[in-house]
Image (cartoon, rainbow, N blue to C red; front, side, top):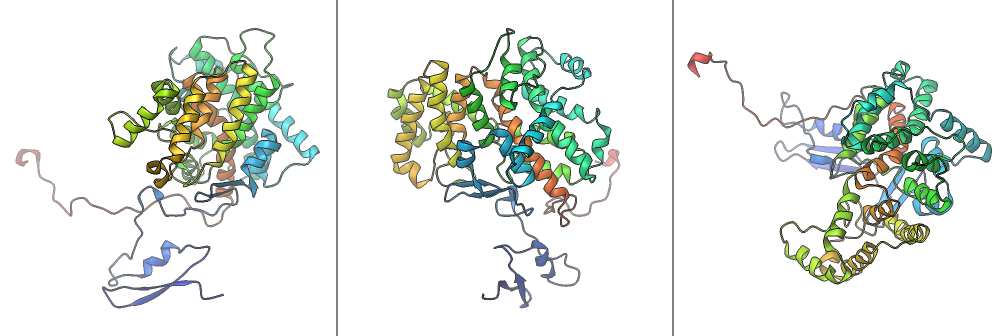
Length: 430
């Protein structure tokens, strides 16, 4: 194998440096040796929004955006969505391997045992305004959990760390359902340990009568959606989880920060924007007019659910969700007319050179909102639905970061652009 290195000549000094290349990357700390003189701090890299900077090594999720590949621990996400359960996938992401039957039974049992939350949280939830957004409520209640488990601060203790991971995965659906029911003025529904993870959540979310039982196909659809949203490499909220966690804060506080990042419309709110766009278009025959407006750059006309920061090909998750939508509509007994609008919009966009040249393909958000709408889950809950499964990915990334000996507290450099030294002037002379 040829020498894996990069030779850099500093034209300011004429000096030449050899920088090692490992895994297709250089360590930016190796650039510090490149300096004009002894007083120079050394060369830094400038990369706003981490467009081309790796902040960690990870064995959890692999993405090849150009090829449209997404794998958890080496398994293609479409295979997991088609064959695995949500609890199997969560175990895989956290522990690195698919569980045996005995391991899965023990894992599911441990989750069910922790689904209940402290009764004091009921009073805490009642303190929010009647119209409080469920996502804002979730941020606050998850953060509040840290006060109920003070031992969670001992993040370097493997046993205590695993206990908090189990608690968080178990309690997030309960808090999410209660946040929704508070916004509707409905009484809280306690978890049912006899139900699966997804079925239990649906029951807590939607039960307005004692005999409500979620349809098995709807439960399976939610399992698939949870699998597809479980982890996605170093996105905004995952970066927040790692950054907060690097200070050795407890995982409840770190997860609250990640949920807050997901709350932003540029991250977790995209499927809501897609649904509103489809409603704005209204019918299949109006799609060409809408596409023309997008291409012309008309004010207020944006193509939502297409394109992705990582994927330059068809998002593999979108392919799975597209097929799932039809199955959900069959179960609920009605076909959302917006599906025809979505299919026509996708057909035109995939054939139009304007979109093809820009590599604008449907992403995971394009069809997921339609499924949630079919399940009568309100728009303000869409981002909450995202947060529930992503908790697994956040926690896996958090634990991986804590056990990585190379990691330290996150502390990016900056390029200072302000004033040079100035002297203070009394207010009378300003």
